Length: 170
Image (cartoon, rainbow, N blue to C red):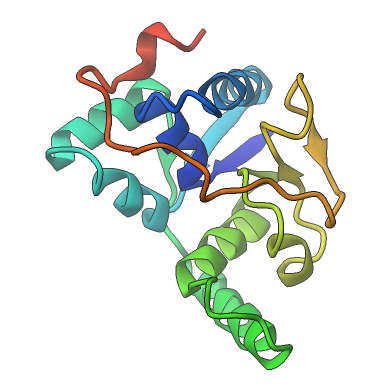
């Protein structure tokens, strides 16, 4: 099984978030037991932004391991279509195109998306399985579009002094 991972789950781990770290670690462990974890270039860029340099970000991502899976033209176009539909339905601008790029990538190139941000993806990407680490104690996947977590309620995502999570994963 291929699991695409969203930035918020990775920052929970790299930033040692006291509220979400344990659930996100459990979900990453489960995803690794079940197959491969991938992230698109948008996620890699967002994660790299909180590290002092690119080499540190790559080391942390590879330690999990998270495979780099670039966006395709099809994913970019699907994200654009989803963004346009979202805005035409009156969707607020608190969602940015990057969210839709991550969702479209997962919908086309993975079996599910590991994220705490479940609110918009269900409507934008029919059939996308959302795996929310905070949904249950055992981090199971959900198809409940009404269930959401608060993705903004995180501490500073800046990595701890040793952001490589090898000692925290299986």
